[in-house]
Picture 1 (tube, rainbow over the protein chains, first blue to last red):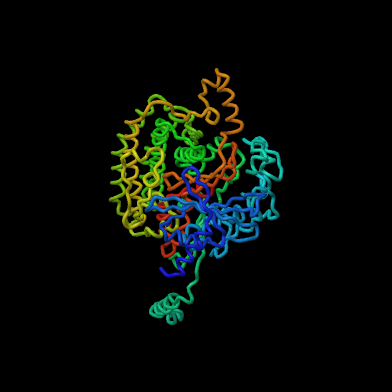
Picture 2 (cartoon, each protein chain N blue to C red; picture 1 turned 135 degrees about the horizontal axis):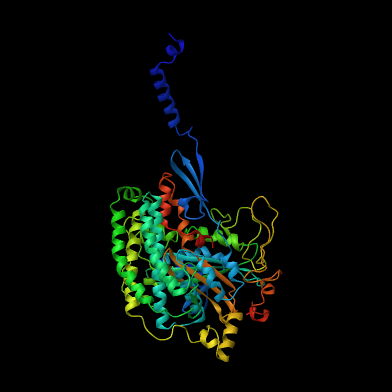
Length: 189
Length: 416
């Protein structure tokens, strides 16, 4: 081990914030700039399986979005969650060069939540069609959908909700639409 | 003499053709053909669209296009209580709805911090293994049919019918079971169910051997699957493949073994792995897995414990129906749990379960209350399909149905 190497790992260790354990799962939080370095180190450490990658929209917080990585070390049977925050117009460094499964997961996070990933080889939409203008899993996207200006490409009208299993009134935010959603003061926890 | 005959000698024609063929064989001139396979094509098992670029019959590029069955399940989940989402899990991997119900309920129970009573656990093990056999049977039948062995499909469907009868006895529905609730199941095991499962498992072993013989020695089937679509163990894990597709490549990762849940650590079963990682190995792993599922089923029947089959947490778990109709307390609890949902703590969990197609994971992000803030479904078919653009190039068009069949995916789960 060279001097520079241990310096860097100490630097990396100080960048990681260890979150309180919940239900036996450990979570780390790290600044998005440190993601490639930390992930490469974790893979070297034995975390060879990226189980999942999720984008979360924490509307009203700054930075707004969060990327959640679920890692597993199969030989040691360990599990680790790594989280990083990202603002609306910023990009998270892609980890698709470390685990190739991240390629589709990151495309999905971009498609559904609108989180950009820098260094991704092919950041296209994956579930919605090319050219679709919205990101449906954002909290300001209503359940009934939004109409788009591309009538020839795909079905773009709002979905009829009346008479459905969960009748909601159209409004900007899901908590206003959905009476069962928790009240505002609880949400700010 | 006809002047035409003198100018067009047979030898001339042959020479010209030979000359032409050398020109066509030149790589600079050959034209690439783009072929759209799907979204509506029998071998794509649903609505997978593959954009293939062909050089002659060899595929040079493959771009899977998914999303045709996207229904926004994750968005819908954010707008309903925890229990209301159970019917949506039926429609993920619609070939194994019971296993999805169990995986989802286990994920929410992890968030709630529940420890299930033993009877509920063993009931769920039976659910998972029945679903696994049923899903593998369909996967197998469809795979065999895709490569030309039509009979297999009819045989496997006869067996699936028996499982459907058992599932109907258990849940009241054949297909969309919605059997689990947070903290347990909708009902206890009905009388005669365990006997039915025992009867099924006893006769199924013999059937499984018949199925094996029908395909193992089927020259066409073996020729079309051996050494085809080879995935190395490292590559499989790199692309996040799980389930029989990963184990076919020699990696023995099985969630039931590595991160046991529902008391799977107490069951005696083997995890079969392949050696080559080709289509045939993935088929063989599924065959063996069904045998192991039968083994688990028989153990579960033997040691089915008595006692409660729901968690005791009256404020958050649905009370027994007979008490709801006669007791005030239970009526109030029923009303609260149904209208507001189980009161989940603030926090986030990830729970992965070994489903027929691979690891079905749920990432739950709760901010308290009866509604998820974010629910992410880690669908095994989604990850299993991501390898296609890497795997298919170099194969011929006729290999594509065999590769797709061996990956055994479900688009309902992939597109969510």
